[in-house]
Structure formats: C-alpha cells, structure tokens
Length: 206
Length: 207
Picture (tube, each protein chain N blue to C red):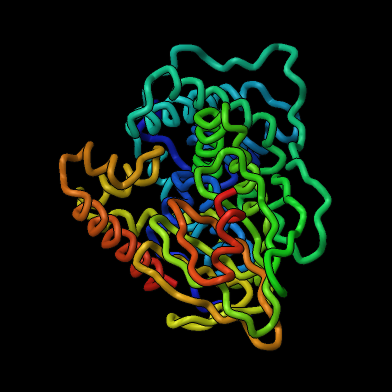
C-alpha cells in the first residue's frame, strides 16, 4: 500500500512547494481527511477513510467474537457516522483512531441493545462533550495516544490479549475466561495487573 | 469538589468498553462527569481502544462505502436533550425521571427510568443526620453522591464520590448532619432491607 520510500511530514497537504523532482507521497493522514469531509463533504477523502477504517472496525469486532454480518453493519454505520459527525471531531481531544473506536463502541451498543431502547450511547456522547476544566494540564489527543501506545508495548502477550478481549466486545470477564480457557480469577488478576501496569507507565510519563 | 472515592480500573475499563449494564453505567457516568481525574482516565482507556483498532488485522468489507450519491452534507449531530433542573448531572438527560415520593420522614426517592437496564436505578434524598436503611443484598449496589454526603465504615462520601459496594457489604450509611445527602443508586440482585425504614422501602426498591 505505502511505498517504502514514502515520507511522512506533518501538514504535507499544505506544504505547497516541495523540492524539485522529489515527489512526496503523503502517508495516510486521517485528521486532514476528516477535516476535508467537514469542510466540503469531500467524498474522495471519505472513500480513503472508509478503506482504512471500515475493515479495521470489522476486524476488531470479529476478533471480539462478533459474527461477520454484525461486524460489517457496525463498520458501515461507524463510517457513516464519521461522515455525519466530521465537524465534531476535535484532534485536541482524541486521535482519529480513538474517536472512531468510540463511535464504533456506541454503535455496537445501539445495535446490540436496539430492542431495549438503550440510551447509553448518548451518555458517552455527553461525557465526551465535557470540556476539561484545566486545559493546560491535559494532553492533546495525539500525545495521549502516543503515550498509551508506548505503554501498551510493555504488556506481555497474555496481558495484551486479556485487555483486548476485555475492551473490544461485549465480553464479561467470565466470557473472556471461557474463550481463553483460563480460570475467571486468572482473567481478573491479569486484567488488573495489565491495567495497573498501563497506569503506572502512564504516570511515569506524566 | 474534592473527590476521594473512585471506581476501580476494571470498572472504568468495563465502562469504557461499553460492557456495563446500563443502570450501573449511568451511576459511573454521574461520577465521571463530576471528576476530572476519572475523565482523564476514561480518555486513556478510550485511547487503548484506539490503539487496539490500529493494531488489529483488517477484515475485508463485503460492500464498499454506502454513501448515497445524494447523501446530505455532513451536519453537526447533537445529543437530544431534555430540560433539566440545575445541579442535575447532564448524563441523566436522556432518561425519564419519576416524581419525588416521600418514603419516610425526611427521606424521598425518585425513579430513574432506564428501559435497557437490569439494575434498578433511583435517586435518594435524605435529610441531615438520618441513617439510611440497613440492608443486605445479593448483587451490586453502586452509588454516586450528587449533593451533600454520607459516611460509613469505609469513609466519608461527598458530592462526586463513587461508592462501589457488592454483596459482602452490610452497612448503614449515616447522612451528613448539616448538608443531608442526595445520591443516585443502581442495584442489581435482590435486596433485603431491615428495620422499620427497610420495611417501608422494600416495595419501592423492588419496583
């Protein structure tokens, strides 16, 4: 997909003049794609976002045990919501991946609990709108994401798997235990350890 | 607002992942809305989900983008909101609230209507100095203090604090002698209330 010689430069889309004879290939930059949708309803930008994120949303749901059809539906709906809500995306609050993962979670809840008239996804939206009280003490979405990613590289494969299962689907700890064929207590202690590990790393980086 | 009691990492992770029962989730959300530290932790846990999304193996879509050629231009979607009285958590806006009903002397309760929940959700308002009903239960009882305070053997719980109790607990919170206490509670399982106040509350708690 991306040639090995591709360069990544922040803000390349606005970089204007580039060195003669050098062709810069802009790496996938979801923030400017979302901005282009918000600005002018840019369909090409949407197609590019779709090609990147829809198969990942579908993959994440299926990894969590969702049937392919449901995963496809959630992925389609998620990208449609990205189209509709592009103007609400605030890179200072969260990275594009984090924002899209939250939309996918809300839609999974809406779809799974359709018949119960759940309003839980609205609760998450209200919380997301809450402005931080002390902006200078909070990190930008990109900084927070980078730190979380760095912390996650230190999880053991077992911890990573438990975190993954505990987060990506409607799995109770008991379901996770059944899927991994390990005792419930082990799931709980691994998850607790993984989360406190992440927390410790994040506090060190603060 | 100085908050000293917060949900465990596992509870926040389950909230972030969308796995909590809706009734329990609402009580957690009332705390998160009031607490900057928990909001920061929630954002971190959501960033974990973003990282998982980036790392996952993509699965090809059966069909491509389904934007109709005439699809409306993107619009700012907004959350449906009902007018709320002041001091009420914003996260309760999507839900219907029953009337305050006195259930004893200086104690009143109102139901929070959460059609998708297994847990029962209600608000409780108690006058200064009274003791909340002594009770035992089989499931969870999660509480966020909205105003005032109460105290029991695990400490003092004031506005914004989150009290995560399970079946092991058997306690009698004492309401702050000056401020009284208003809280939101989600309960799962069955509850056995004791004492005269408990007997009064019993039919209401069951709804």
